[in-house]
Image (cartoon, rainbow over all chains, first blue to last red; front, side, top):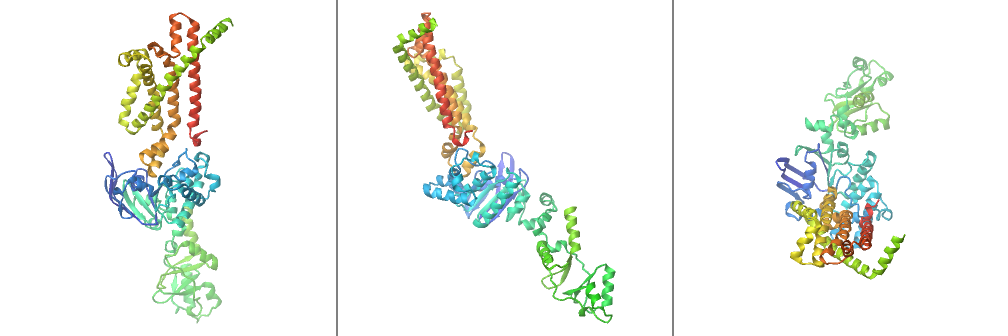
Length: 370
Length: 215
């Protein structure tokens, strides 16, 4: 765990970090993001003491980082820097084996680890061990950068805009690879970026900073759903949630006041209600709005009899979804069962709303087509 | 053609003397340049790490180089007398500037991101210098040594003025005796020596360029 306690940093007269309090849990990838000059990189570099705080405390696994030897501290923290962090005069193998060399590992142990890591980043050791960084593409170089940070299997890894210099396709690839590596290794990673897409894609939690302060620190989902007013909202982009359909929930797109009727209604009344509201189905509910089933105009016509009541014709055991369900699941459900309606009910079974094909098309159309 | 033959026979007549003088010349140059490297490179490293000193040290080396070499030789005599010692000191002082300057420039120009990467991975100051800065700056430092050495070969001809020998001896004697053959017999080997030193050091400059940086 990494903990910032009231950390401040001045460069000359300007205060760049204004009382930072932050707690980063074990095995969590936290993204620091914000406009340039917000203090995200400064905060990162205070963790391995490349920058010393002016006041305040930083704890790493409950140890006061400022009381540890900076050399030892840095050797135990992986560090991936922007662009060309590889040493051009060292081979790929030497670059990856650097921290092990500094820690005086025996050569065979170092070589074994280097090979393991090259495999991990999908670069065959026999082909790449003895190459020089200048012979590699940008994406390959940064793969080596990541491998190098993992060399001594540190618990904590700091990444300072590691993919910002790569072309979009390579960047996406490396993000995916990092994501997979993190799934497997579960390190504590602090990742600085200015790219919101990258943050949403990688972060378990995202810390949005401005002017040396934390504005909001939360999971991607909560940031998208409940961004703080003002800067955070604009920074994330107001409609960003629609680019992440898995975060869009049923309650965001459902019809809130579906047309409903109780089972005692006669079929004539039911037809009247439908035609009055311009719909072709009714949610059948009890007196307490508990969902019982659905009656469509088709069902009623098929079994038409003036004397019959709704409870003799409506479909029971209908599929329903929860307001908190993801829209992706709903779409799948509708496609698999080939249905045009899904009522929405809460845990108690109370009817909350309705999703229909046409309501989906309408809402999604508004969002994506403007 | 006749002139050339005359010259060649002049050289053959004095080949023993010429060889001795060339030997002395190389000896004086070599000692002075080796001392200049031994002092200049560490001094360059020092002023990279203690930036405050850099203005003073480079300024001093600049001033030394700006001083007329003949005058410097004159100043040496009351302190160190005549002979090879004051000559070596004079050549050494002149060789210092390019070595200090190139060491300083080479080390200072190592990319900031390299230093940060090294530091961030837990290198000590010494390790950073040895494993990152020096290897990356080596070609530039070698360039400084090359300039120094070539200049030193020329300067060493002055050493003959205070009795330290070397190829300058033939040149000065040639001047006082108005003997062009003798002047040429001293000057041409000195030139060849300078070109040879330049060539050998240019090869070394390439050899010390880290493999990963060679084009």
